[in-house]
Length: 256
Ligand SMILES: [Zn+2]
Image 1 (cartoon, protein in one colour):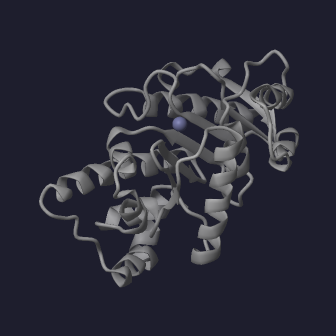
Image 2 (cartoon, rainbow, N blue to C red; image 1 turned 90 degrees about the vertical axis):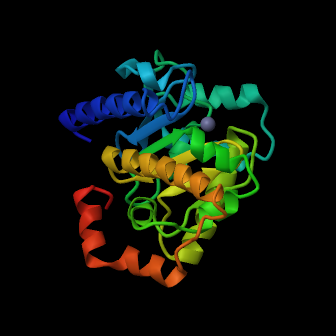
């Protein structure tokens, strides 16, 4: 990636992180959540451990080499210090901070075709559902057209898993099954009892997906108090996602 594009991306990453970490959105507070984008063929920036999205600066992000992290997939049991060692070893600049412990799932998601940006947050309404017995309904069904435009026909639901390498493996397994079933990549990955991951081709896409997921969750909760939600029939969901005007809107929203 050329230098001007690298500079532009890192700036966008800082701005995206601040927006999703700051009120009124506050999709993450304190050190919650992490964001990333590709910085080259085999490299990416990810939020450093212990930094906050709301106060992100350029040095809140560490550039990592994917091939170094890839060795974490092979080992079946790793101590926390062995994982830390690999995280530190993956840094392009050894003076940078330690990458987030979730760097491995960012590394995987950014290796998928067309995925350039990842935003992981803990939005309140989304987590309200993910900490309830209705998480699978929220992943599988859709209630209104814009939810489909921004979030796709369905989301991946990953059962609760220990953060770090085990979570990265569970996310990879969930995305692979989804892709096999649906013939496309998801836009939303829901982590049970944990949070939301939005993936997409641009900073604007992952921000829109995150916002719409939180709005959908609020509507789900409202509708639940009235005996719902009433979900759209599968044929309607498919129709919306394939409509030319909706595809046009996706393009305008830079979702594709
Ligand atoms: Zn998290």
